[in-house]
Amino acid sequence: MADEPLPPPDIQQLSAATPEEIAEILAYALRYDERGKPRKGGWDFAVNLAADRIAEHMRRSGLVILRARSGRPHSAG
Image (tube, rainbow, N blue to C red):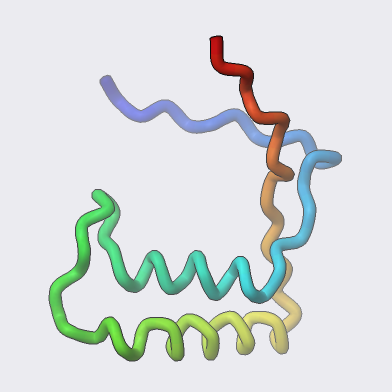
């Protein structure tokens, strides 16, 4: 089954991501591939530094990343 695109979020449900959230997401993207498998290359020690520098550059450039607000947790049962 092909991946179907997600519906666009309601604009009222978006908020600006914090620099810490952006750095965390960038570090994950640098550390793992699209399947969630660790990347080979041995650069894990530099990943957090690179992610922090990229996030800071994005902030100084005026780039704003929006994220959907977390919804209510579902009830199990």
